Image (cartoon, rainbow, N blue to C red; front, side, top):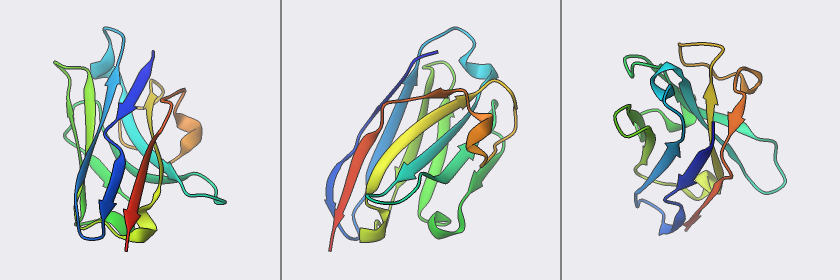
Length: 124
């Protein structure tokens, strides 16, 4: 499985961005998908995840109500819509795929495949 994340960029606080993660492989619909982020000098941390069907989602508290994860299994793509962005959202964002679980999980160890990351910079 190969993952290609895109959509990062520079945005002012309060603005929006939509990240995309395109996956290769014919069994995308069997993967739980997640988004993680890593700010400069910090460890990678969980942001959001979605079940294989899209029917279940999970968010870290700091992004609840601002970020929305979704997926289009016909396009082998998962999205992260980010609204009301804050400077503390600045990080490299990574998408990840898990064949171990079908439900959304925050545990990075459950994800076997990782994208290359896309940089999100939020200016104040």
